[in-house]
Length: 117
Length: 112
Image (tube, rainbow over all chains, first blue to last red; front, side, top):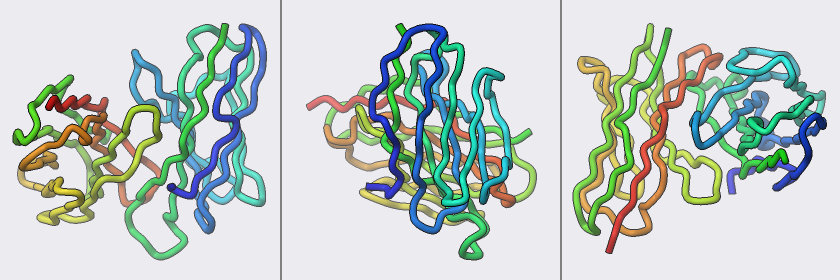
């Protein structure tokens, strides 16, 4: 158990809909990362938040957005869903910056499997 | 920019065979290097790490050495087991913590 929790575990929805995925980082970790894993594209970095602020952006579509709240949990919002958005969405957290570490080890949650019908 | 190039899979080995999964990287500065493993139906787990040149990371019989001269971090195991069947990801992190790059993953299947 990595200490990172994600809800829900599975989500089935229809095209055009909007969903919210939730992530709670490990206790004390300030950084949260979101990834999309699909069969044809591997693991794609979407976005990073550090202590409530957006820190880095990857291949995130404009239809997707994220935020990190004061209690450090994060939400990934996916809207106008398309069939191709079906994937596993992982959240990871990192202690970087909290303990003087100079490297950025990430701890992954179990993922949310999104199916768009 | 920084990147990680990982050996294409899938790889199929017999139990007790020797495993090598190649990983090379491109980075400015002095990145940290990682191997993650993803078992079927699960999230990624950190397998081992190395934070500076010549460091050797090891865990569960797996090893990888951070080679700056060849910009490589190859994963090795002397004798694989069926339970090692999984997808293995090489990754690097820059010192700022702002960027984290994963390789495409290598699927390993070990047959009895």
